[in-house]
Image (cartoon, rainbow, N blue to C red; front, side, top):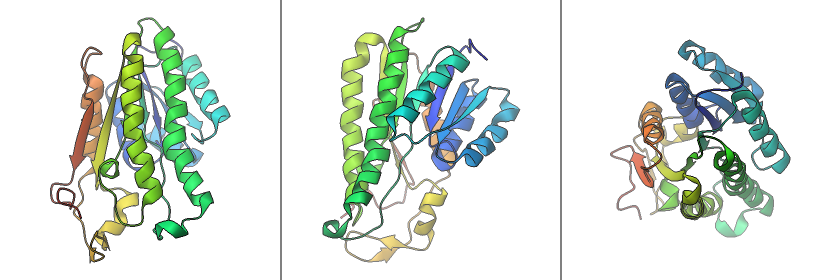
Amino acid sequence: MAGASKAAIVTGAGSGIGRAVALALMKDGYATALAGRRKDALEQTAAMGKASGAKSLVVPTDVGDIAQVKALFAAAKEAFGRLDVLFNNAGTGAPAVPLEDLPFEQWKKVVDANLTGSFLCAQEAIKIMKAQTPRGGRIINNGSISAHAPRPMSVAYTATKHAITGLTKSISLDCRKYDIACGQIDIGNAATEMTDRMTKGVMQANGEMAVEPRMDVQHVASAVAYMVSLPLDSNVQFMTIMATKMPFVGRG
């Protein structure tokens, strides 16, 4: 499979936003490495993408583990010969408990997956992108509405997503000399398993419970595909895509 004309890595590709984006990239002709914790879920994504005719590679990966991240990028480079796109999407949350009661282990789990994992993947992507010919590539980080405003009792998720904004800006600044573009997509209430609870009601800033509108996850995939479609001399630095009626503007 070496020598793909254009290649991507998507983390968290076994479900939700990651799966939708991976399928969109494959439809657009990207040979795509599918990373995530669950091999069976990744294989399902690969099977769903077969109709596109694009190549895929299933690589079970814990992005918080540096050895596994290095193995992921080595496998993708060996299979495809280059790397044009990294979608840093893998992430997790912690139980909704008062900030002062959040166990350290839960805090560390979220930081490892959401922040450290994105950093480690970015490092490996940059190493490949700056050395290949043609040089460069694009890194897109999955921020969140929580990169702007927290939900109640979400300190670990919110802190890491705010940090993703700093990571995005640092990559953009430090890697422009390598023709690497970096942008961030902040997503609000895409309809995935992770947001099913919103159909039953989630806590608002005033302590009340309310059902929140959601949007089709395919709109997120289309937005990422647009960001990817740009030439490397153009970049969507930040994009917010959200359910129009979700309580974000004016939250709190």
